[in-house]
Image 1 (cartoon, rainbow, N blue to C red):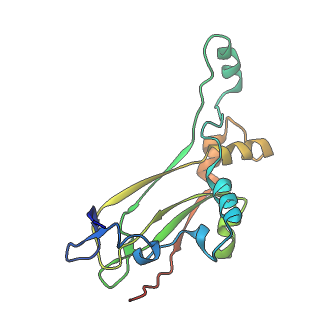
Image 2 (spheres, rainbow, N blue to C red):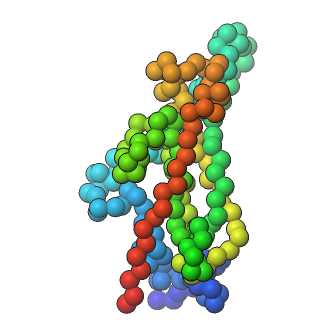
Length: 189
């Protein structure tokens, strides 16, 4: 079997690249997905992924109901999406030994549970952005993640927590983030 270098993904500070054979197991990269913790059944994994990522991307949240109603007769309704843009170091946080530690940035619209174990199951949890980290590498490169807040904001409007006209102010006041450090153990074979 022929393996080729997976450029530009460096395996170490010496400049060696990961190959398809070396990168088959994400634990070898010092990372796992939160959804895979505790080896869930396939049904549990599918349900978790659908719950987190399959919300509609075009949830209608407008700033003026009357204006939308009057324009509906002459033009198609426009849809406003509310997105959070997260910029983070591609190779993780400085781990103190010449590499980058993996971590997650979790977004919440509303109260954040005090117990870290409850974060991803919280009703206020909106989404997360992750970085894999690089145990022996530090590079000043940034990655941009986008999380759609529209569905969570629509739920807030429907619950009466805010109105469509006050949506942006509600986001500014109630959108919170937390950093979740990822525990990494490296097995040497």
